[in-house]
Length: 541
Ligand code: NAP
Image (cartoon, rainbow, N blue to C red; front, top):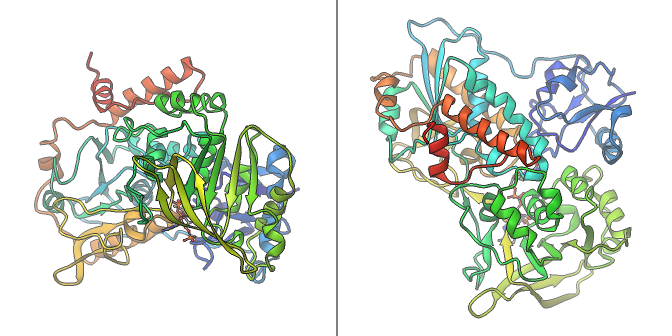
């Protein structure tokens, strides 16, 4: 018997340090960690103690005998990782992975402001609180009246178990050394300078909140949307709740084939009654119930071996009976040489998809080697012109007819008013974890960045934990080196924020949403209007 990591793995790596035989890889201190699609358990070393099961925040680990039928493929996938060259060259002895840094005692607590309540910010708070010798006070600021960031507004509703990671973050909010200040916008309600004066350290963790369009002719036409808009819409983000998408055609096209593209494809292809059991926003559910879309074409400019989606998500895509997955152009895999660098399970699952000829009312088409050239149409999108290349050299041009093109080609960060730093290439300029002062080309004292606003939109939720460790290391180094100071007291700033929603307010809203969800046999029914959120959180009639 062995334990197996399955599709929900979020790379949080909480399982790694508790494994007594060091059989979970890649570890955060190994070179492959940052780029890995998931973590894997070596079946040859696992002693089946189950220590990893209880610490996994998203319940992704199970004993092989307890795997659900659709999870059994992960047994081979875990084993396959260790068959790759060098992957079994590890010491079978436990090593600490997230070493704690001792801090000398000071006459006052370290005061930290974190801007953004998503995974990146929460991991920073969690790591600071884990420093046993450190007296720390943390204020977490969030622009919206609800915490969670990407967990609430990015993770797809049909991946509800992934949202279990939020339970660990909720524990942080309950800690009496932490204050939650929701509905507070930096640059409007409070400035960067005010934060810098009141806190020793200010950590920017506000993510990448803009979608990207491909920059081809016609991509501004109605019917062309950035993936971020669609994701935020179905997840009930208040800024996107009023958007409308043309779901009246038989086909939708998604540009890009990363995990966001697969999320969008699943939501468009799923039976709405399946989605009705999730926390999808009510307005999106109603629109999807009326959708005429039967084919979702997921378009990639590169080939199958370079697919941007991860293998666990490809496996997840195949789990549903609501639709069928196909690969185009037909017979493509036969034309491809063996990939130079194998990704465990990728070819096998693509080949199984290609061999599957079952029919279904709805389908998701994974189309490769297709470069988008132009969105065509008069007043609105009517189609997407592409160049289709084949590995053996053939090229043709084609217009894929559709009224809906969603570009899932990545997210971009933006600057914040009053933060004296310009975003470059969608991220804040940094030196390690420290934000750079553009004037001096040197680090701004006590200002740090973490997560997507620092490294760009890459990795999964747990990748931010690794990033957070760097930030906390830098903060502690600066604190011990006497390089951090603050002139004001945080209360001088927070007392001016009379409209801010605190943890109690969030709990009221959380209970309201869960109760409404229970009545509809759903995990949660999200409130999407800002006014309604404020009313419920503020306990106002
Ligand atoms: P991504 O993984 O970077 O994929 C972007 C896709 O867009 C790629 O296929 C890329 O193609 C394509 N692309 C970029 N620019 C393009 C252009 N100008 N024209 C045509 N295609 C273009 O981005 P993402 O899907 O937004 O995901 C962001 C991060 O979130 C990833 O790390 C992802 O794994 C993570 N995520 C994880 C989950 C999950 O674990 N369940 C869910 C959602 C997101 P090329 O490859 O050719 O550049």
